[in-house]
Length: 462
Image 1 (cartoon, rainbow, N blue to C red):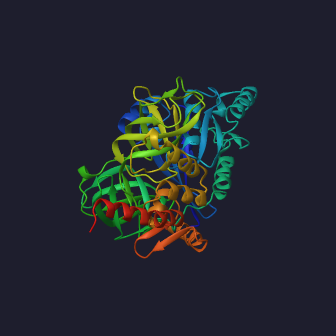
Image 2: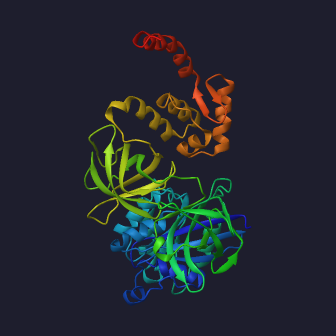
Image 3: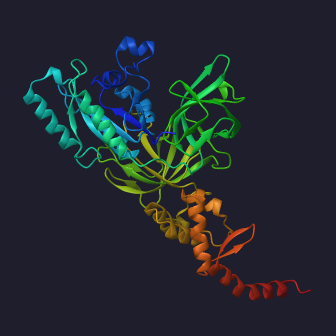
């Protein structure tokens, strides 16, 4: 096992040299479709391994820069850890430069730097002006204060500086969790003669070995791993952060598609409801209104959804608020999963945010007094506060630690440790094999019980 696995998005406007940069760094041509070669632009995201000298396993994801293929751009950037923003020196910052910056911010890319491409095509003064413009545009993003490296695919100036920057930035990233259950969003599906169905994606969490059991969501199709492959090499085990191809046992090609999720059994239940923290981009042309329908991108999945705002009738550009998504198609998500939204009829990003909860029921204004404080606690990622608010909102239910962990998006071990702490403090009670219950509510029920019994007996005396 290598020390760390990192996925790097190669983002930027169409024809700014993203594919040329990847080709120069790796020797691999990521534009493989006949139409891509004919038109001279990327349509699908392409992946190439980058040979690291520092004990890192790095995959470069070259995403389309043309607005017509925004869906594929969003899918390609949905699981990256960091990014290289490619800006052509002769063109400067363009519309998709800015949009890709917004997508990376919404999906939570941790770091990155800028490659100022086509440096051979301009004089030094133009190069300096382009650099100044870029530094102004990336202010307030993960690219602020990061290198802006002039680069030319023609004479390869700046190539070693870009290699060094990749190594340096990737080395600072935290490793993904190996303890959490396995999850992977599928971004490619293929049928291989003699092998069957192979799906590809980036591992979000956990590990996976040959013969491990898996479930395909949202269809809940059970399967197992026949074989594993990373960058065209067979392997017996893969780890969080890796790009991997998985040969699925007894799954037909028509049973699986891009946008589905592979997960460890028992981890997730598909849902048509998501409670979310929603942010409207400042660049959005109009507010998002209560009960507006939008297109939701979550991982590599895409579905239409109804937006139910919880606190006001509209969110203006630049505003943020709590909302419930009511989906046309079920998805399998966990709290803190990032998402992006677009209008139904336009190829442009208007907002995004993070999943807070997979709710059991539709949001009702009459329950807002309990729901909103609880969701605000989830938004803060304060686990003790989340647990307390959850018990207040679900006071009459016995709650299992596994269910609570799934609700909050924390590990079972961390959730169990907190529940035990609350049990020791006398705040919750534990009923063996049944779950935890609020001590405050238990005491209330004890006080109410004699009155309830007396009422029953008065209506139906023995």
